[in-house]
Image 1 (spheres, rainbow over the protein chains, first blue to last red):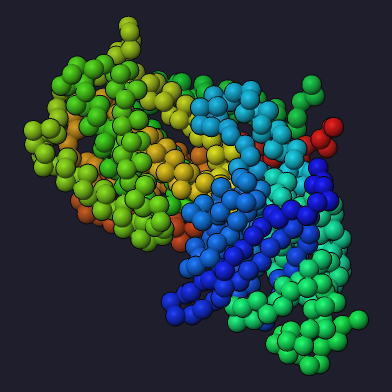
Image 2 (cartoon, each protein chain N blue to C red):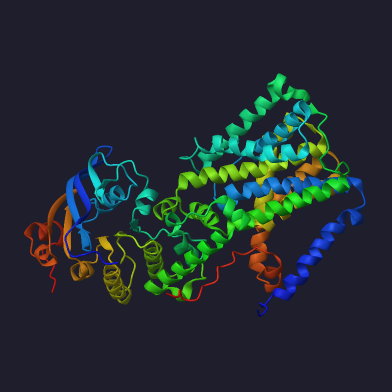
Length: 263
Length: 337
């Protein structure tokens, strides 16, 4: 399952620019992700991180510039098609299907990989039952992977917030994506949940999934990332290893502030 | 295979319901009341359609009366002009209505909430105006009389009591179909769109496609209800299919419990019978009390009867009311490979 060691690019962003009316949210950003890496995208509030994720996942259309996922332009592709090609994401505020069970939430994550149609469903054909069993099995596995298997039958709305974030990750993982975009996965988690998240991200990487992560928790970012990209006012101001970023003057000034110290 | 818990109750419950339903015309006897039951069944089918688009997918469609009308006029025209028998109009009316559902669904894909509601109202009014004014085709205000009673081979369903069995079979099939849809990959996609359309799209659901499919299914149910209605009343006219019926269908669904198959049927039946029970009041009082009853029910049971059953939480009732609560899928044993 693991992709070989040769560095190949899974996501290529060139000159990406997004204007909201007169507001320049993202200004000519270039960025390239290698298969298998964990990349963190950091920056102060309003620096354009979530905008960038929305452009990559097809939620927004860029004003200028382009995004290539597996060497194919994502322009004019609706998000569910990108999902089919192996890109999955989570949201800053967990967007779950609140009135569905935990298991059903995860099952929907496999929608793009399954094909049961109306006739088969109405006639309850054997192929449909088999597919449904397969979806169910994989959903249970994904829940086990993030540690939510005990909650399968609960309604998503009844989960504590930290577990809702995990459920979102399970929903993304069920289809075995090659690229996972995570928008502040640690937001709202307590320290012990965050440390579990670090080991979860590590296990996701071991499955061969590339992770592109927007995050405010600097401890998590510095611990897990291979490369850190820093945005400020919509522009890329730095990129490098966690150590390099921690010692970058411009980053410290723009983002971390003078008092920041990281071991 | 060991019996599951709760099976004995179900095993008794369903045959008893079946016997009661089969014996209903013998119990009721009154031709008038059986006719009302038939109407309740027809409304139930239309409300089941509305349950797909509004209850499951969460899109407010105030045009179900128009689809009901399209089904009724399709059957009426094919039967009176071309002499098509019941089974032929049965096969054609639902797809015709579904095609109109697609016509409404496509241009409104990017609308939701009150904007979608307004667009569907407009659609309903346009259809009604066409039925009303295209004299050469629809008979205009005179409508279309002389529709044949349903005949299937040697069986003729011309009396209310015999039509009851035909309509009941249609309702049961419509309800079973919907239970299967609801608990399928497609039903999950519908419910995901209702809960969070953006998250559904980014989980891999083609939300445009499934919104159009939901509209098509909704109107196919409406078309089936219309086809049965045309062959039952043997006469159709445009004012039957006006917006007030669309709103009544929505009230039926909300009172029964949006999202619930059983609730759709109970809600439709209740609101068909309440005006009949209030007939002794004469004149405007009946409608005023009917309206008041709807308001009171919605205030005290915002989730409808299905929600009430759920909140009472009686395990017995839960077991007997097939889908009053969302059956959580069984957690499978760990995959073996």
